[in-house]
Length: 203
Image 1: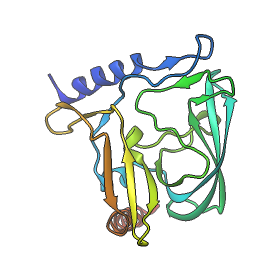
Image 2 (image 1 turned 180 degrees about the horizontal axis):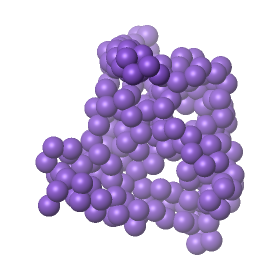
Image 3 (image 1 turned 45 degrees about the vertical axis):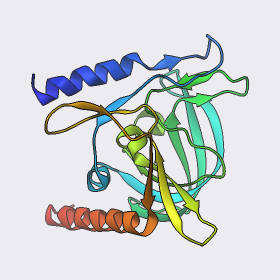
Image 4 (image 1 turned 30 degrees about the horizontal axis):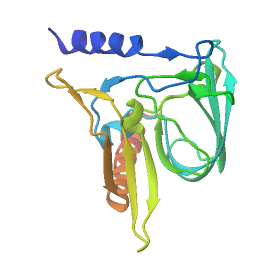
């Protein structure tokens, strides 16, 4: 079976795990989502927007598709790829209403007010909707240690990852802790290479 067919099947399985709970009761996490396994450099390469900032608020809204989405108001400290804006509203699929009902998508990370994040996002689509590249792979939470050290934590839950070479599907690490300086250095280097390549193409 080809890798493309394998991944198509995996995506179909992921789509089947999308749960719409708005009329059914309290929102609960779906079992698993599926995405291609991407390293830091590949995440940057596939991103339309890479930023570091803080979530100020989360507001559930009904999107153009008729499904629940969430507008996240953020202050942006750094934009590593894409147009910089000091304050942004990012719209992501899914969300939770005040009564606890909502729409949860398998593998899709949820953001919370007060979190400091590094996000790698797709291009805005219909209704300005974006998705983290690689689902939970494209979201990192910044943690500050008592000694002043900073780390990036990536929570991937039950995300299933498809190896690009073999097509094999494996469970992602549920929680990864990365050095902040090293990881941001890799992101910046990848963004710089992407800029050079874009200039070479006359973009």
